[in-house]
Length: 326
Ligand code: CUA
Image 1 (cartoon, rainbow, N blue to C red):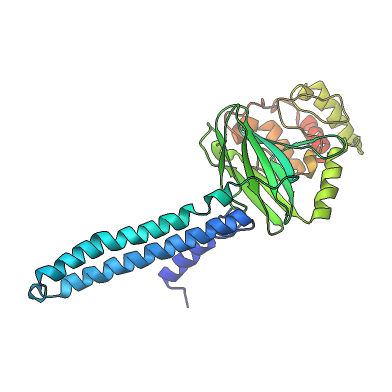
Image 2: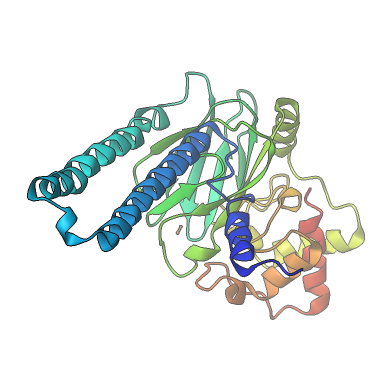
């Protein structure tokens, strides 16, 4: 039997409440609080709506002579002013009360991650207690159950940093560091996005936040600290030659090679990331090829020039090299 239309629409609406980028499917302490506020506000709104509906039906069906002036006044003043004022005040206090907790700084000694918003990608930097800093793009990894302090800034215009599954959003402002403390409570892969219109490709500026057990996180961080390994197959070695010969290293860094540009994303371990182009493509050799050959089509306004003029053989070699940077 086909599902009744109302039920199927309801199921669709509810399906929108889940997934890796939903504030209603929380996986962080702040997001849990925000989702709770949302459901209480929604419930409050439904109760008020039902009450207004019931009063309307009552008013329509009651003969006029059943009212006396005094009762009417009570109803108007009570139902029109006193009850809404009380209800809205309660909801307002309930909604504002958690703000100090949501904006509280992370405890002393928490992991710190600097994220710089750029048009239109995210520069992510970890400073481990020993050794090299880790710089990567469009991917953040976090240990589960540990508070993290994000230090957020922008390189150009105002962006807004938001991982809906983990917590609230906060602006990234040029020349000013904003801080956001988040504590992930579940492992998984979540999606973050820019929540402030920042130019042509604002809608193509996402990233992944991977929450994992502490040991896995530390292994990942140590691996990211290491320089890139030399290419292992001839096609990748050819790709590396082309990468350097075409001047890619003027904008991109690949630690362990002469490429040391700082304008564009660090590609030292780009093959190990979950996406390309700030969350817009998966990360397979063919995606590298598509990105290099159709950069401007895939992300209008992007600063990286398109290298579609390279012969297919060279594009394949470049893609093999970059994909091999695990
Ligand atoms: Cu960055 Cu919108």
